[in-house]
Amino acid sequence: MINGYKEAYKNPVTNQFQDGITFEDIYELYQFDNDLRSIFIKYILMVERNIKSSLSYHFCLTYGDMQDDYLDMNHYDYSGKKKIVIQNMLKIMRGQLRNDSDYVYIRHYMKKYKYVPLWVLFNVLTIGQLSKIYSCQKGRVQIQVCQDFGPIKINEMIKMLAVMTKFRNVCAHNDRLFDFRTKDALCDMKIHERLSLPREYGRYVYGKNDLFAQVIILKLLLPEDEFKMFFHELKVCFRKHPVHKEVLGKMGFPTKWEKIGMIKKFTKTDLK
Image (cartoon, rainbow, N blue to C red; front, side):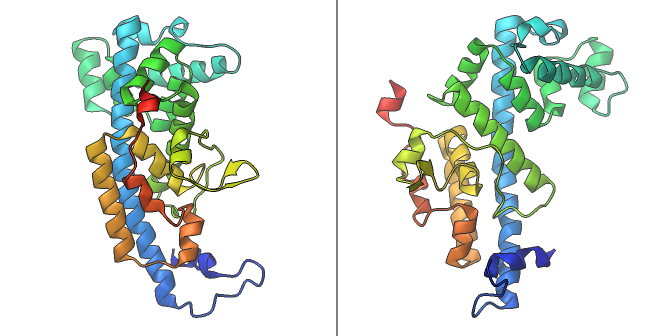
């Protein structure tokens, strides 16, 4: 396990360790990454819970709360490539509606009421599946979910859910987190500008598909008090595990990354 952390301290050209690097440095990075995973998964799950609650509420308010309502393909945007996506999601959803389900609460509703409410079903779906279901919603529901979290655009929410899905999976599978990069990337958002993040060739260097992008997601999608708790735990983690400056760069963290704890989530202009 520790061997996977050696590369962080090697020169990419010579493949030799940087001067002064010891086994203790590598082990410290390993411990640091373990603590990071524990912190991030805790707060990603909080966002996941809130997204599930918001999406199930607005869908049912718009189309009804019966099983036939959320299994009706006409209640989704199935244009173009989305048709295959939502067909697969509905197949997965139907597959969970069994009297012999692995989940006690699913069995309870199936046996007693002969149907399962959407908010109950969402509890057994992954954030990846939820992300796809959100992307196939019609505009009205998508907008309402965004509004629960602030002045967030639909395409911004879709990208945030896609990126968060990948980081959630890394944490859940105990993979190396600190230098992980996703293929998906966040949209350029106003928060990138307010953080004064540097650009190269017109693209933000930090906060797009790196671990700092996940920090931005938590900033935008967590309630203020929960983000403060996350931010405090993250700072404690950095103090507990002093890491070399190069590691910050591999994480996608700018030098002044703590600025994200001081700025407002949204400005007055955003809220107009």
